[in-house]
Amino acid sequence: MKSFWQKLDSYFEEFCCAAMLGYIAISLNVEVIARYVFNSPSAYTDEIARILMTGIVFLGTSLAIKQERHVIIDLFPDLSKKQSLILNLISNIIFIIFCVIFIFVAGRAVFFHKMLGTNTEGLGLPYWMVLLMLPVSFSLSILRLCQKIYFLIKNYRESL
Image (cartoon, rainbow, N blue to C red):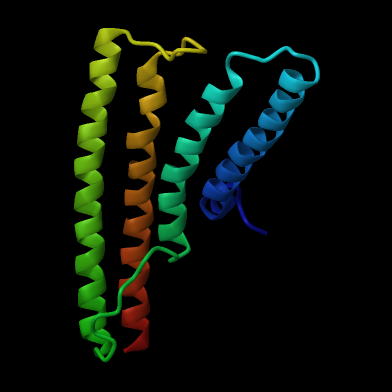
């Protein structure tokens, strides 16, 4: 039986993305019915859908890392296990560096919008809260990349 933490590790991104996509599908269908049947559109459904779709995209990054479904180009298909490990480690470290830079830049945007006090148009949410999904998502990507590096090294050592 899996513990809570193992389930969280295994299904966090899938659950969040599925919940957000489900909400988008239901709310936009209800919005279409409200708008064209009852002539009573809501002011916030479209904005929530855009925010959640952005969240799905950035959470999808860590999901792709976890499931190893991101784009990979095999320039060197005939490498030894050690060479393949080194190349994978280098590419994952470069990806981690990109994520750290992105977290830094997104964090600056979050603090900038918090300082300005800007709000979203329809809901009036503080815009910094919306932008907070960027550093959080890329932090999760770093966690998944570190897990991937750990399992690469572990599998290499076990194969020796």
